[in-house]
Image 1 (cartoon, rainbow, N blue to C red):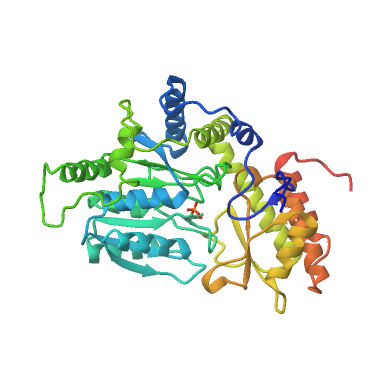
Image 2 (cartoon, rainbow, N blue to C red; image 1 turned 135 degrees about the horizontal axis):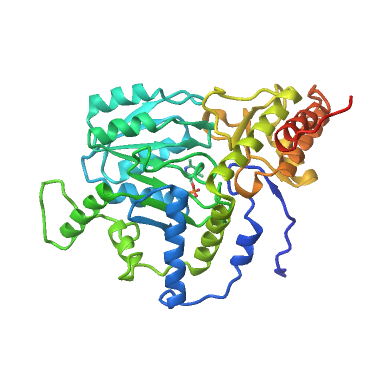
Length: 412
Ligand SMILES: *Cc1c(COP(=O)(O)O)cnc(C)c1O
């Protein structure tokens, strides 16, 4: 058996992650390795933390990545703050909400579940009513549910939690860097994101930020670990070493107390991805994601396919298309990939086989990608005998782009 050097085609990745990495990020990935305590590397850590503060829009003391995929950051936060018996309200409106409940459960917390039908989000007032009933220590919620393409409004929930001294933990894995997210303004105590979505970096790190209210719990639990304190019966040290934020924050503090070996290469990539965001400007970047998401929706509607879910709370970076009657969703994705080099995604749970999920995140959120995916889907559906309005999708998207980008006066 001969194992050849990799020679992969370049793909147009229009899934809700992983998406195409920015070419600058790919170049940064081949930067030579230096030691994790090399002064130059320590400087890279500081700069990355600064840039994360910018993207999270926070004055928090702490902002750093956990090494691992996005869920490693979510698990680090939940495992580090939830003690056995702690009550946690989890409003679930898709697959990733269930991931939060599972992590709460494994950390010994008591989950108080709210469930919305897939395709909907919660009225913040309903969440507040539930919080009043339960009086939890923590509310954990997803911001953008990639499984359903829906965005949960957080501002009112954040305000209520802060007034009542309840911690709000948010999974912003799919939204940060592409959809408006204001950590401090919305009173979010801990936020976790991922690299392979709107940040346009490969998967493998989970940037997060948290405030003093979270840090107080970490410090209390650290004392317990060292046998210095036992305030209440259920007080317990953080059971995970790898995900112990009290240790990871020491590693990211000026003392650099060694915890794990930082992934130097991934940090080069994350730093470059964040530098790209800083240069583009977070507001411009959000506008760009909104624009391309809108062009995609306009094109799909013009094509005559049906979009899934309430329009009002649609994520601008994920668009969900209903599979037309009698069509194999997998066969369509196969042709899109093999013939057009475009990857779109299938779905999970109750939506499996019924919808396609099209992402427009990070470096993949570009005009040529949108026009390419619209043309490819139109041809593929036509090939399978679906009646679509031929030519209308690209035309409608083109008109939208010309109107918003550089309005031109047409003579006819
Ligand atoms: C992608 C995603 C995750 C999980 O990310 P991993 O990097 O695969 O661990 C969690 N939450 C949301 C909302 C996501 O979209």
